Image (cartoon, rainbow, N blue to C red; front, side, top):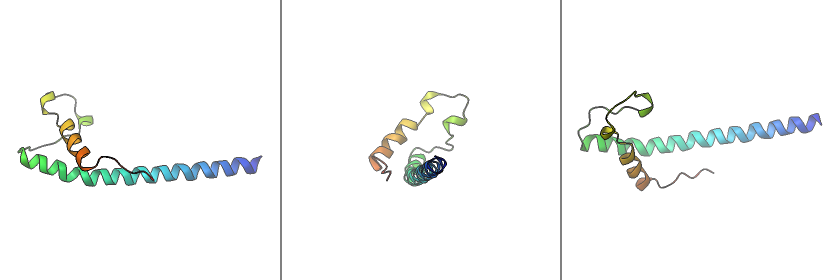
Length: 83
C-alpha cells in the first residue's frame, strides 16, 4: 500500500510539474504576441502610459483598452496549443 501511495504521489508531482511548464510556455507565447500589438496600439494612439488593471484603484472606463487589445490578440493568436 505504501508503494502505491509513493507511486501515486510521484505521478501526481510529475503531472503538476508538466502543467506548470505548459502554463509557463503558454504565458511566454502570449506575452511575445501581445507586446508588439500593445506597442503598435500605443504608438498609433499616442498613449503615454499603460497600467495593469489589477494595480489600479479606479479610473475612467473609456480609458480601458483591454477589449481592443484582446480583439487584436485574438486575430493574431486565436488559441494556444497546450500539449
